Amino acid sequence: MNNNVCPICSSNLSVGIQVWHFRCTSCGYEKGDLQPVINELSPHNLVNESVRATGLRDIRVGNFKKLIDVISSFKPGGGKLIDVGCAHGWFLEAAMGKFETLGVEPDEAVFNVTSARGLPVRKGYFPDALKDGEMFDVIVFNDVIEHIPEIGGVLSECYERLNGGGLLVLNLPSSDGVFYKVSRLFCRVEKFGYFERLWQKDLPSPHVHYFNSKNLSELLTKNNFATIKTGTLPTLGLAGLYSRISCAGNLGAFSKAIIYCAVAASLPVLRLLPSDIVYVVAKKA
Ligand SMILES: [Zn+2]
Image (tube, rainbow, N blue to C red; front, side, top):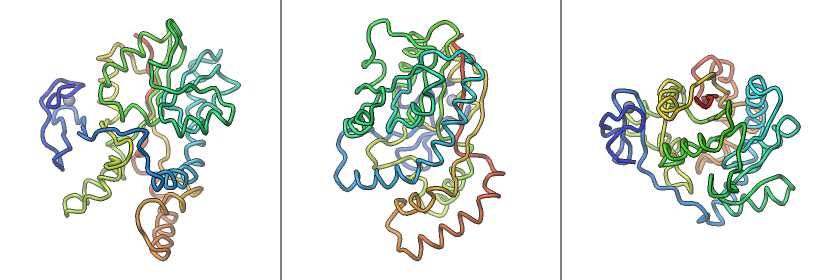
């Protein structure tokens, strides 16, 4: 992808908030020039990953169940489903029984854990990990597509691997979300840490893109998919909240407790604001 051109509307990208951040003033697409680094986790990061996983599990599993219900409403007869970058396999577990499932996961340490749990997962990247002519009825990316630099290439691979009437499902962070907007406000007073955290800067797999539901649909149209549904999923829940706060930075126990109480008390209000997680279901055009 040309560094200076929007992958959606082909406008020139403008310099954004930091030297690695770019924005399309026409469609609102945002790009991070942050390189993914996989399989280079230090032991310290692995510990953090396990705490992070615990904190995220409850909210993620709840969201996965909602997403499966949406997908099932378009595919009531089930079919072959692949979860690209299936991580711990929670989405596969939610989909089992309704779909014939397969996961692919490139991170060796994560793959080994998921595979040892007996889940149907293959090590590798999409589509390299697939067999010749292997086709699907549903292809799902949960918090994955925003990490892939050559997004147009992956979307055309999805098109090739979907049966007629097949569905592409993307679930990812939204630049319309309230937390993302607040992180941009912090940048105005030179507080860049939260913004960098949301882009996962300096983490093993940083974000490369930030979309909203509108420009995401435009990207899909450009790649021969027709959006049939968009929606949002909750970003935060009470379950697992403390673990998530614990791994958000080097905070003392008192600070963590204060933040936990403040966030917990704000949850009913936060639910009324634009969510930071968007999903889109698109049909092969
Ligand atoms: Zn654009």
